[in-house]
Image (cartoon, rainbow, N blue to C red):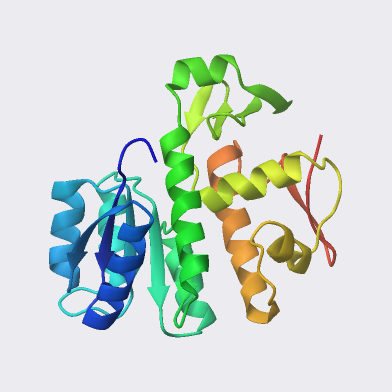
Length: 235
């Protein structure tokens, strides 16, 4: 790692903070810690970390409100929600309010470190928009993707996508007109070996992606639905 990246851990269970701090520092990250939502939000604003690990159940202000507040202030810092609850609604809400990813406790440290790295890498690789737009490959209509800088452009203007939105778009765009079921997308894009309720995550991510890349999200031209089958990228 050339320049040290900072991860802000917002979690009220000290033993979890200690484990996360130890493992992240061992991987070369600098860490900051906050034990409640209010101080987490304050540090997120003042310290401008490269990524936030954000627990949902926090004193003073819950994780959803912290994330929502950051996004309302225009912050695009990658946020990974930590949730002890396996409830589908938690995951969906996290994505709806702009979290980049979520991970359910208990989690494997290896998986968490991999998710942290992937989300930081996308942000760190973002080249200046003008340069990246010039070398972006057209995929359809006025949509183009620069896979080096991990940026997407519509009419030459950069679109801010989360890691998952970017990965979903590039996956579908690289297999034009091929229909993928939600379960298949969970396996291919999310690399999750489980399905069930989590397929709802695909619907939420597709909807958020359409809101960003489509001129009229209600009548999409890029990411289309094949009823009863799944989604595909139309060219």
